[in-house]
Structures are given as C-alpha cells and as structure tokens.
Amino acid sequence: MSCNVGNMNEKILILKEVSTRSAVNGSWTNTWTTLVTIWAARLEESSKESILKDKMTLDTNIRFQIRYRTDIKPNYRVRYRSEDYRIIGIKETERKTLQEITISILD
Image (cartoon, rainbow, N blue to C red; front, side, top):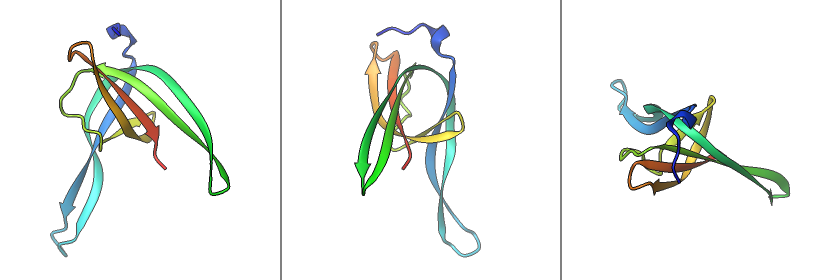
C-alpha cells in the first residue's frame, strides 16, 4: 500500500514513558514525554460496541501511516488532537519505507 506524502497531513506525537528520581526524597516518578512529532496519513477508524460490567462501551481504533522509524515501540503512546492513545499495533509496509500504527483510546 503506497501513500502519497501529501496525504501525511495529520500531526501526531509519539510519547515515551520516562522515570525520574527525586533529588529530595529519592522516590521515582513516571511521566510521558514527547519522543518525536511526526506527520502521518490517517487511514481509517473503526469502532466496536461492547458491554463491560453492565455498561455499554465504545472501543475506537485509528490507523495511521507514517514514514518508517526504528525508534517506536508498542509500549509508547500517541497524542493525536490533544488526546492520548495507546499503540495496539505497528506494521511495516513498503520495504521499510512506511509503517502503519494502530491506536486505541486509553481506558
């Protein structure tokens, strides 16, 4: 699946969790920091309704295509339009020139 670079018109942030140690009391704090800001092509969105603990929920997945990178890991997050999502899939396409990232809203 090829992608016209002109379709990469959505800005997304890749977030990485980092641990820092307090100089005052030595306790550790985890925070999410921006690894990189990149342009992506939004490919599709899918939604699925389900009932969990007698409550209706809507799971929404969004798929993006980006230029191939080696520094994005499945345990990172994506910030898209000021909302944070977890990465649920990374797929290589086009002979390591492009990647597809599938994300889902955080619970």
